[in-house]
Image 1: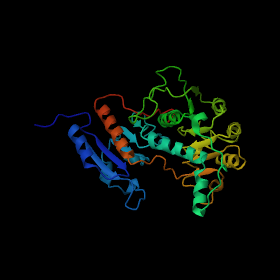
Image 2: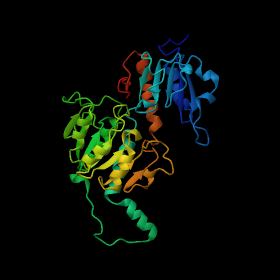
Image 3: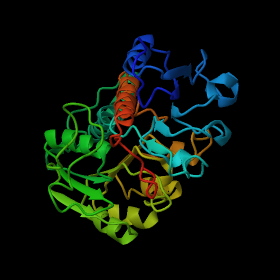
Image 4: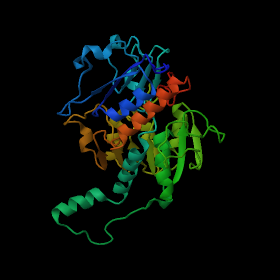
Length: 360
């Protein structure tokens, strides 16, 4: 007797991620949704190089209806696609894509899978700077024992963290900062005046984040640069930039903003996109001591050219866009994809649906 059809019985899905196929995961879905076809291809080759969509077998694209990937394929391959599960927290790579502009196609992010590892990166860079770890590492290589009392150290118990973009990543940064005794100020695009509005509706790794929005002692909001500047002027010790990159947030931190941050010599930490910071202004702020230091996991452009002046800026740590890395990353992506396929099958609302106006 044939299995009953489901609303996914005619779907053909492509999973294009840097992981080997997981037959047990695929089989589980095929048992749960008889008729669904799942095509899985690694997005990097054995040498770690990215695989072009053009190099995939042509039949991969036949009647494709579901895509799980990071970068957008040519629109000609996606004529029948009805659901795209991105492997990123934002949709900025897709903004000009023909399929993205078709509002009949549902786009969802993987917002919520990055916070544990990225928040550790943020706190790690902050602690490293405050406790002079890079200097001590240099001294260790020279076999030099610095005399006592040569350094001044401020621990975090009186520090204030300002989080520009209080989404899933910002909430886990707040959780760790709060555990260290820091005061947390949050900034969101829209006003969050009620308990309900402060709740997090994105995917959340168990035991992490600030699901109910209870950690910040003060909330700020707005879409204008003046409102952002007011937030930046709150005597912040560390500023965490965790915004999506849109036309309204590009270059949101520039010369004027570093002048504001100079009052408290704020440590600037960017784990969002390189385009949020005017890098010429950042170099000047570091060279003139406007800010105590900075940590960047993102730059503009990427990779950062070998001769770029940012490499030589003082009191700066640059990592090559790796703060998102975690051995559990792809497990979480598949978890979100499975949740969304179940909701799609049952005609329920999907999680992490992209707001086409704000692109996240």
